Amino acid sequence: NEYQLYAELNQTLFSFEVLRGIKAARYLKDLSAHMFESVRQGVIVQVKKDFYQVLLLKEIFEVVRNSEASSKENYDNMKDRYESGVVSEFDLLQAEVSWRNAIPQTLEARRDYDLALNNLKVLTGIPIDETLTLRGSMDSYPDIPGPISFEKAISRRPDYNVLVWEMKLREMNILVQKSNYYPTLSATLNYSHAAASDQFRLENDSNNLVLGLALSIPIFSGGYTGAQVKKAEIELEKVSTRIAKLNESIEVELRNIELRMQEANIRIEAALKSVATARRAFEIAKTLVENKLATQIELNEIRVALDQAQVGYYSSVHDYLITYFDWELAVGTVSLKGY
Image (tube, rainbow, N blue to C red; front, side):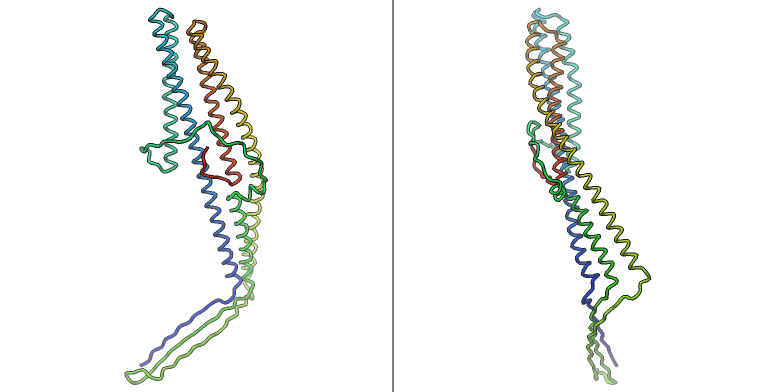
């Protein structure tokens, strides 16, 4: 009767490949964190844009609905005056046509608003049937941001940092591949136990413990290691080219955003004056019509001009906010804050 027990433990004591592989894993962790942040900021900006798109359509709906209500009020007023013999049937019919033409415009504006609201619910994971109340205004918006250096902007951008860390990872990969040229030191611990006997009990047992060191020196790989190093160097060059292109793209993007923001801000100021002028003209036109010094057609034209001025103002604010959100994304300062 006999039995044997054998155990072996191998442990790498020193390896350039392992050490650099551990460091590469840390680089990959940082790269993944920047990738997550890049996606997160992109989603936030998209939600903010869709939110203010819904607010814009809501404001347009309110403008059109108020226009319809004003036309209805004017029609009712003209009807009372017609029945009193103050105005002609022609004036009454003009007022009625103006009111009824406004009804489908209101329905269309309501439809556009509801569709945009449903799209926002889908984007944010809110059930379509659930009531969603928006809190926000198109009358408030941030000031034009101050100048920011190009270096500071790219240092904040997670998508740029993704490439920076990918470049570090590619550089480390070159070192990892070159590690195959270097020796590796490892330790081996062997333990064996054996016992044998002609009887029913085991005797003559023996224990052996052996500790050894092994130094592996690569001599010839058939050019495989060199090919892997060359491949890693090519991958590094590709990332370097992508970074150079992104630098140029970001520089142009920042300049374009600055121009768009300045243009939108000028449009807002002009639209504010246009709204004030159109509103004053509409009040004057209403008085002139009541005194038969202007026609319903002239009143309708002024009403349309007022509506266009109000929609133009809200559209200008919307364009400014969209550009501002693009700026936040371009300089890596995206936040959940609204305006």
